[in-house]
Length: 370
Image 1 (tube, helix red, strand yellow):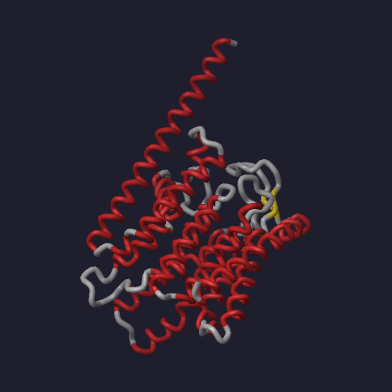
Image 2 (image 1 turned 180 degrees about the vertical axis):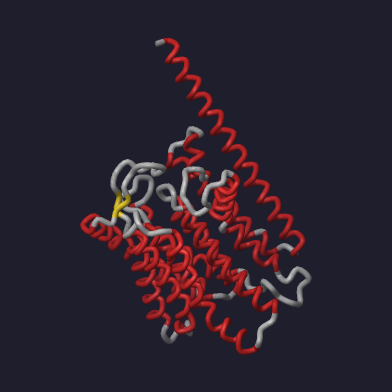
């Protein structure tokens, strides 16, 4: 085992152990402070549940990374200062989400979005300053706009997918684990080590959130994880917007998009459905794939495991197949994966309709017999 692999296992182990200890303490603190999510409306949980699980994940990732930095001294130059903008942005996301958790019933969507933009701007700021000083090109400004949209899309997609016990955290474990494998082969050791600590922290969180939940990740956790996901997947897409390629390196995004395939597709699906129905796209509902699976006869735990399996399949394609394909074949593989997700969604919706129709017919028959 090499030094980098040993550091990754140490960071993962420390983050995992820390989460096992800290997350239940965060649940107790949340109950004491009244930072809880109450059942009712579109929410399927049946009891008041504390919301500070994300605090435990944040502490666990921090502990895991500090262990990595300490153990790396004299072995590997991590240059942790280079990650300061990323960690600052992640901390801002965490704090914005924490405020939303504490004031869950009164905080509007707009302040949260502005907080997300502020977090991403920490990363973008040096590049924006350079563009202003040099006048900037259309391509340069376009790159920064895409960068902002990428981060906001990933953060909110993961936030949307945190709608059922274990769903978002399990999909994130799969995605970060895929990133560890991918980046380990690419030589991006520092990013890979951060991904390893996130794997450990989220695995340590999962026993408290699946199949039954004693604590929720909350927006603090989902937005913090989402920012880390956006950054790691952006690092994984190195080569995007390369001027020497015909497609400007767009095919370099394919592995990352596939690794995050389930939350990205589900978010796009529900946003389109809300827009078609004339509802605000930022208001939550129960039209996600997970909810439709449950209405189609699956238990919540079964629905989550099905989506985990789909996420594992897409991540496997994104990690072990697409990176070794030529750009043209990457697009074909991406189109095939999109077709798989579309067919799966149509099946889910059809199964939901059949199950609801059968339930209505059974109810009408019961009324007739009465």
